[in-house]
Image (cartoon, rainbow, N blue to C red; front, top):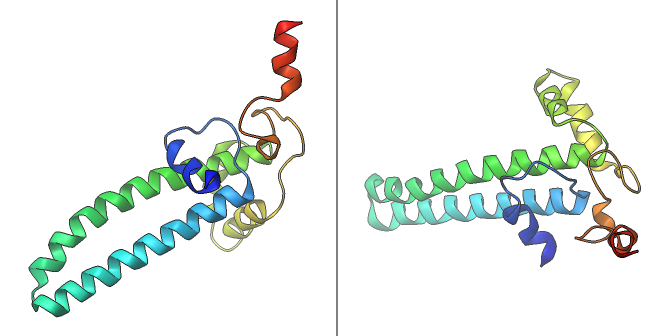
Length: 138
């Protein structure tokens, strides 16, 4: 459950790192939610024979999509941080032909093992490494 809720809890936080699991499970959630809203919207239009009903359902869907875009950008930037790359590398995804390939490779490959310049390795746990905490008290 931790991997499902973490991108939502850190939706406005672009600091730190995100694992592949966190990134891809988040995008799976987006797909399921958007598909669910589209299904409910089309069923409501068919059931009530009215486009107005579909429009009322589309309003919360639009709000949710805007929240998802912000959270998706945040998790993508943190995923780039896992490779020790700046969040500005996200802009390469918009370069025709080769940009999205670079971005997809970064999203599919493992990040930098251990700590990098963007923080601790998220595969080690949700908190700072034990050695860092122990060093405070020694």
